[in-house]
Amino acid sequence: MVSIGDSYRVLVSTTAIDPTHRLRSRWSGYRAGTVAYRRLLVGLGAAGIATFAQLYAPQGLLPVLARGLRIDASQAALSVSLATWGVALSVLPWSVWSDRIGRLRAMRIAIVAAAAGGVLVALSPNVETLLALRFVEGLALGGLPALAMTYLHDEVDARHTPVAAAAYISGTTVGGACGRLIAGPLAAVAGWRLALAGVAAVCLAAAVVFLRLMPPARAYAPVRPSLRLLAGNVRACVSDPLLVALYLQPMLIMGGFVAVYNYLGFRLEGPEFGLPTVVASLIFAAYGAGTVSSRLVGRWIPRFGRPAVLLAGTAAMIVGAVLTLGPSLVLVVAGLLVLTAGTFVAHATASAWVGHRARVGRAQASALYNVALYTGSAVIGWLVGFVWVSRGWPATVAVVIALALLAVAVAGAGQRLARRRPAGRDGRSGITVGTRP
Image: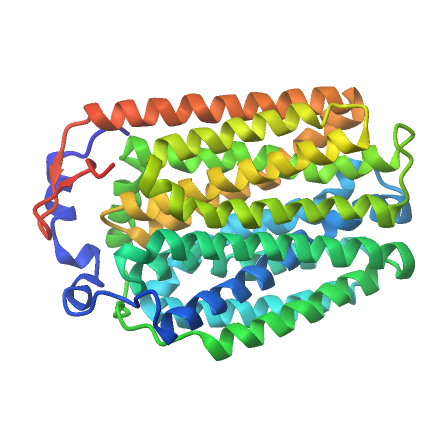
């Protein structure tokens, strides 16, 4: 896991590993201030809304779903977890297919399929069908987060990718908040079907914006991937200890984050606070903190460095989790704001760091990051429900804090191992593979 063997160093030195190299040498990418760059940012922002509004919309109505279907909190959370499992399973196949048909074309197919899936979910006749369709919807949605960061690093001038990546992440937070804030209040007055239909309508509109605004892909030439090439790319990604550490960041951090949002609504509607569903669902407005903080990451990384920004985001998440233990609604909301801001600082930093670090198989590197993210969101977000049901909110927060502390330890270990690892040469650029900080 820690080093790349001599025979593999020969493999990664070939330009076939990165088919974008030839085009990149002639064109540096879309630059900030141009019309195409602005269209790209708006289009990817719309993709973030379309993806995450659909993916997490049921989270805003979990208490309503649980009461209506007479199931407990962890069972209701399957409506979120099955979709995120679908995303986790599909991001790597999407990345492989995009090597053949192109990033932008693959994203267009994914967003159309996901929008259609959102409509079908709203028409589900029963809970079994709903859960099955949510899984299929997740398979379609996986094409967008799997390819967005890779597309950015392919198509945007390297000097502007941190800002562009942060803008995309902020779009995902808007989508996450939008889906929850639409679904929760609508479910309280009109039921979960109309709530999900309302979200599907918003996502259809966002998909149209994406399809109309995205500029053409100029830096990438589609290729026919081979299994050997794919295996080599994946091996390069998992042989880098820093990349592995970065993959574990979203698994641990976002897993805890999703768990907080899955089950806090049950606490707020329970006997401790007794809030009505419409009011409790407004907690998802706290996603606005993530929108702001993720945009700032593009400024903070050049000033403070990636390790410091990642650590600061994770520390803020821990502080926010502790604050949600407070007995007053003001403290809970304040904690949620801090936790959300910190989580998306850490997520935006780690995601951009993967794109910067990966010297071969960038599409697969980004896909593996998303596999980890959505696996953590699905599995941890669901399993923590058993802690909430049996032990209550303090135990839930304790698990979230433990996950964040583990993420800090993993990040530190990955950086130390990366500094000590033997270096291989990248024949394309003469730069040592695995030493890119």
